[in-house]
Length: 107
Image (tube, rainbow, N blue to C red):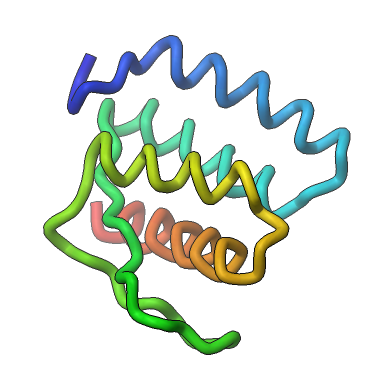
């Protein structure tokens, strides 16, 4: 357990959830889930910040809050996944994808 996250259980649950999402045909959500469990497996924690709460126009990148990571960010990501058809949530999910990729490049 790191940052309040039970790593093995969470990773297994996300892998199972991804299988269902792939069958349902939601590529963005499948990618976010895959990047999430790969990140948790690799770093044994969740090190991605929550996108800032400023209004974001479609096509713009939401700035990230550097100080917020861990359990709170993971909880927020899971809440976005629960309603991934919402346009604002979709934009923020894409921001998480970018953040996962940037974090992997930097580390």
